[in-house]
Length: 394
Image (cartoon, rainbow, N blue to C red; front, side, top):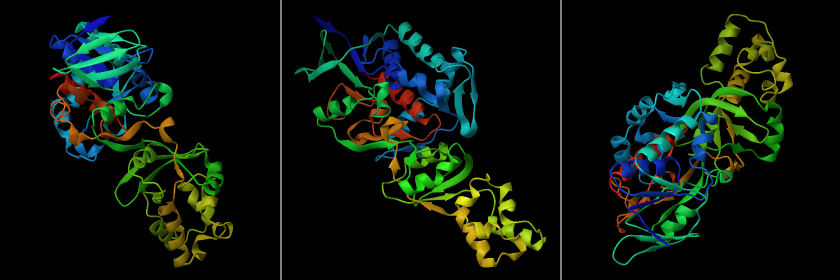
């Protein structure tokens, strides 16, 4: 049995659904195929079930790609304000958290229901539990797609399969395999926005801090972030670690400032000047949790009274907390990563249409491309924008 449609979109996630809506509005006959049993699974689980759907400030600097200019075109043509207009039209209640992050008040399902309602309105067909067995380019133009049930012919094929992150949600390398089949380069992939694991000795040393969160600055030679750090029983997590992980290279040490808002050396010198006669361990309690302090300083130093500390000792104390150098063992990998770094080479794709430059009718959108955003709604905005742009042309 053969079915003829204008557009086949592989992937019923954020970018695929957005592309389907826009193509459907242009009266294109659109079929969305997905191997999962439900659409938008990652949308539903994102942001702790509240979906951090965009951000008030979206800049190209918030994205990583070998081609740093590639994302600019799509992001400028479908902005966060355009997506917010959709949210307002559906009266979806939302709120802002730190750094301009926007979340649903109630549930991520509000976003998915809006996208599915728009698909419905545009006459889009979504077919789930469908495995694609073969894709072939037809001699004249277009593509033939063979599934377990049937063959489907289409003029335009959109690959919106996402990355490798969170395989239990159905992530697979299928999109990269399609790219390889058509001779398109792939930038090497790795997990991004992911917790760090520690070397065994350090993991055991800091296990006592599991569950403790504090504001800190993490930096390497290329990037720096200031947000909350969370100690876990496996290593280091929290927003600041997730952000840094995308800029971290294996084997590299990172610098952690555990007290970014205070110059500890100046504070201790001022306390000495004011003749404050307290033990160092008690003085530090205003800055740190009690269980953290002895992991960075020896007991004999902690028992010292402030006036007895030498200038050299004060320098050393400040150094311990402001310049904690640590070499992560690795990351937790795709299992918990929020995004996949790398992907389909952007140099092979038009930044305006998202169509492969050498292959008419083949498009790549969303996370399958080598474009990865920061934590905070940026990856969803890339999905909406790239899907929307391709939807104008497919």
